[in-house]
Length: 94
Image (cartoon, rainbow, N blue to C red; front, side, top):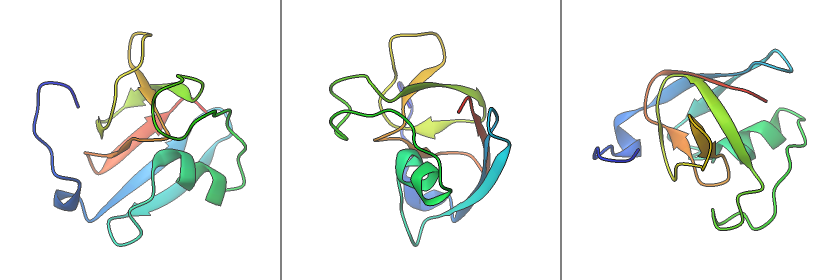
């Protein structure tokens, strides 16, 4: 999150909803997956290129909640390959 200091370890688990596919997953600090990895674990196949937050291919809109990770170019855009929950409930346009 830009402008705020969030430690991913502060969130033990988060409910993540991928709204376009209507899939709900639980993210845990123990697994420490990126949102891209969590989406793949759910069987989704989001676009990505580099997995390092540099190419912008994985940019998605966050609809609810906050994440720790790089912001995208679009309003409310985040790079899911490097983002992890910073709130206990998030919704991603995926």
